[in-house]
Image 1: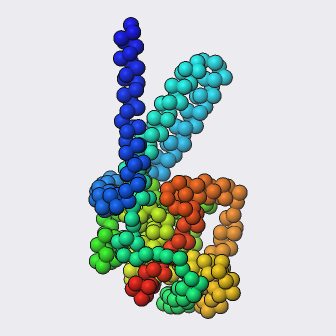
Image 2: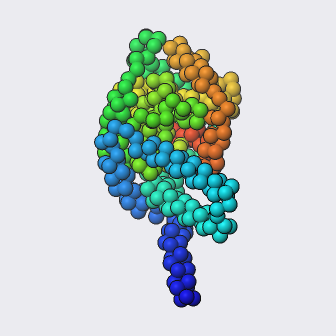
Length: 364
């Protein structure tokens, strides 16, 4: 009898050995960004990501969104079952403890899946290493110079679209198609941005996206890029390129913004050009506003650009709610836990990358 109990105990412990060992290895690996860059991000991950996109890309619906919904339903069922068990006093403390341990082990496997399928990219050297640019502390003059460049770019792009006060909408499929071609264009110059096997879809949760505070997201479990389509249309091209940058392994929000800029500006499409420079102007202008609120150069914007920015502000003002700040706060902590010290403000760190890129290449 004692021998059987001992054997059972070893079997229970052995179920923990592999997940714990893998988690320890992943945590140790994070201290070696060069190894991650050379062997994971530009090696193993490339094949993992392509396989995921190949499996999910041909389906018209989002597998990742269904997976998230299933997780929520499963969690609710588990909680309801646990509460019923406690109320009816049908479980001992030992049984409850085993249930909790089983749940922890499941979470360990979810973390392992997340890290190996994408999450290790948070610890890579990234686009600044690949382009040999080094973002540093920038001055007010450098930000102002960037803002002036972006004002010129956004004015030029808006005028190229025409004088219509209402921008013509594009279907999300068309936007993804152009974004895919844009990555093909930039890959000719920068092969490490090669994107194959398109898997980008409309979010099933577009209707509630504003309550959750997101405009798009990457699903690391299915490899799909998702865009919330319930947005001003001109925002969608840059958001699509941003989420596709995540698919290429650029986990940092600032790097996804920058890679999205490289692709979006290579699209040879006037709406894509306007979309990216409009968003970059907002990032740079807000950064300059913090340094000197009188120097944002908003008065130099074309009147149609000012109208578009006003319409975007009004759209988001109408969608404001009490849930979004809570979700944003949670996401802020998630980003900080994944090597992004500025949390939700990491999106604005693209300004430093743009200035470093301009210093090296002399253009934006």
